[in-house]
Length: 329
Image (tube, rainbow, N blue to C red):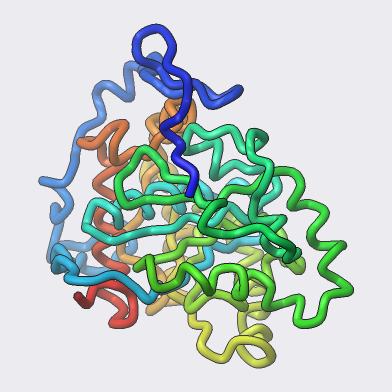
């Protein structure tokens, strides 16, 4: 396993991962004024939430006495820019705060998940691409420890873009990622896969390896249109490749209650999928772009912000909703 804290220290204690700098960026005035944190994670319980339904109370999950086997969740939406990577990083960090061992799988050739954690994906000689294609690569040596305790990363870079072509001739190509992850499943409680914005072979691999799918959905009309197509793909994968696959839920992201459009889109999603939409809604905030610059999750960068509270609430809702995730210890 590679330690990501082997970075070079620079002025002011900032850490340098190749081209990626981690430290305290300039805060916008809006960011300074935004507060709300773990103490407010249960705010509004019993009252109508953003989805129009009464907000339930989600208990803090019990501590675990052991780890594994992992529950695998694919963060999937064929539309880009809907908050998949942001949600993967921050949900993973929130789960780690609750004592879960979490592996984040960067399954997008752009390597945004790695960059979002302050790690330059181009510095690695071996990535998930090499593991998918077999050879002598060892997943234990490829996994990177992040700056968040209990949160590890399986990195990716532009090399992964070639995997879709190279896997075409492989026997059982849809199961390549599942085979790659198998040796480390007993060491983690949750594996979150950040999928690329497409419904190609890489995404099918992620769905085949997953126990459940979480669909981050921007509260915008064009994002809404693609949900039906994605759900059809999930159904096909369930029927032909992975019978255990289920829909963990639809997560509304980038929500701005001040706009009529966002409220109408969210209302339509809840009307169409009343049981699938999470009660937790992730609000649009200036803090999320700032965390990308800082190269760390919002739960550590701005732990008292409403964004951090939202992802902690999502972690609690996810573990309360399903008996199979590591909420059981």
